[in-house]
Image 1 (cartoon, one colour):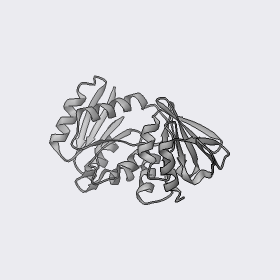
Image 2 (cartoon, rainbow, N blue to C red; image 1 turned 45 degrees about the horizontal axis):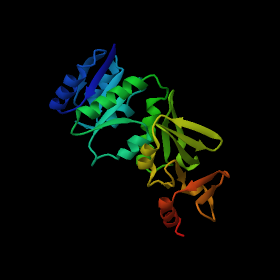
Image 3 (tube, rainbow, N blue to C red; image 1 turned 45 degrees about the vertical axis):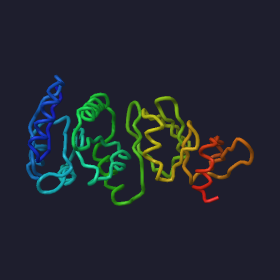
Image 4 (tube, rainbow, N blue to C red; image 1 turned 90 degrees about the vertical axis):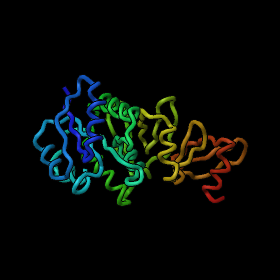
Length: 244
């Protein structure tokens, strides 16, 4: 049985979450709290596998709660509003979230994602620290979701991404990491972080481009000597991006 708790100061939201989660027979409700202090007490005393946490609760945020715990041995799904917290930081940190107002479809996706990936290995504290680093503009990194684990790499080390159907290959120095998410997901996530979609199959780190080869069609050469095609549609965008 999977035990879950809810950190939320709106009791109607608690009711909505509980009613929906009743459809999952392997999930067991183990209480809720509405404030920072009560949440710390709840998480310290209860047996927990999953925590659904509104970002803002009475007395502060649930980030305040988690920072005061000695260890976090459960998974977290945040509930947030777009205006308050950067969704890109959640995505780069592979932290699952649900937008308010809560939709059944989003909630189902988040719960199913948790159930399918709850045995993957990475310390949730690392992901929360990574989220905090992004918010404070430290070196940007990305948590890549693979079939078996979450792996963390600095964005500056990524040379390019290659589409493999529903999967994405990351070329990082001498490593190739296969993500279980499609290239379209990373296109939206990285398109204002020095990455450019140059082809339906490729996305490149602009900082890794060494030269643009003359001729038609256009190809680029990277620092690692990989050569990638540039589509007609992307050629203008690439030249504009490079200020050529």
